[in-house]
Length: 356
Image (tube, rainbow, N blue to C red; front, side, top):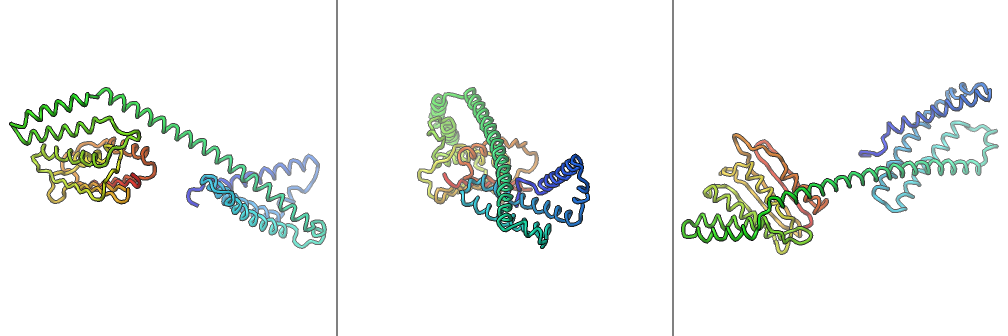
């Protein structure tokens, strides 16, 4: 079993401890009743062998049954799954009791006369019911305690996320600029710059579009934006960076598939793009920065690869990527994969969202 909840060595130590306690208790009771020969009885070769086999059997029996029952409880399996496990437990325990009785009593005629088939069967049933009930009870208690602990961890994580969200909202409010004022001002500057420089006016218009998208607050309740708008935002960021560097950047953006009305949580793609601009060699002719976005059957795949800068590098805090990972977890649960590969000369990011 991979990562069993109940460890084999711990169960072995518990069994050994119980047998030692039983031995000490029996000796103490016998001494109180003035019965001699108790220690000698327990130290007989045949009894020691049976005891050792019993400890080993119960250890492995508990290891399998408790871990199996625990898995069924975690997965919330149906009743018949538990019956199947109990059936296997019953067969194994019956076989153990038969072998144990044969080793203890052999074919002694006096014992055979006392232990009728009904008595033997009844003793087996009672032994199995009691032992399996205790096994299930202990397993169930451990499962409940683990579930309670897990809920506490999830609640703590939820609280931390809510606190982070509150801080983010507060910081946003502190830095917020009236989007209409900013948009109108940039449009004014754009109109005034047209007679003087086509490149300058294009830059102002592109910046206006970037700020308009960044400051928008009319998203639906689920907080998702149209994928086509997110792609256009990425194009605008690439365009304005090209203007900054006199169109000398080596950047390729390829979009494949049918976008239609697909939606995505905003600023995820642009964070990956900005990360490539920040840490990548964006002027390499041999290794241009490569972005590929593909939508297939409602699934999104985004690929980013860039050659690392040579010389002094900016210190990466990883905050941006950590932030989008948390946002992806909140929005998509387990329906996404964010794979980041930090190689010697290249930096590669792959994002797959399996259900937009």
